[in-house]
Length: 158
Image 1 (cartoon, helix red, strand yellow):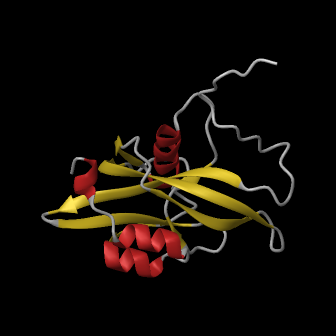
Image 2 (cartoon, helix red, strand yellow):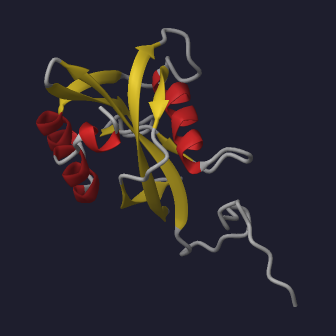
């Protein structure tokens, strides 16, 4: 038996069992207003709670590029994504009212250059800029709230 090195993440959504943990890639979209960091949040489509853009792995893209694609689709964001993962958080993704799939989301910082007005999910979500403190207060996942509150863009070149 030979072992091959793979550049793809070993995630197979179709064959996953109900209790298996799924991986998603998320973008912590930020901008600088003077010395202040602002974080862009979007609403989820179902419950309308505040979240960061995230989604499933995209074939042929790195995890950071997948996160950037989700940021564009969900919020119209274009900018510079950093390949260094900021951290991970866990949550349950509900596909219906009773079934929560366990997920781990890897978070990649994305410095926003512009927000487009024409993007795939523009009629399905709201987007809004918050200070780190206010963004963290609106996030339901404690691990993500902690990441946002302590995010320092200087670690990623500004």
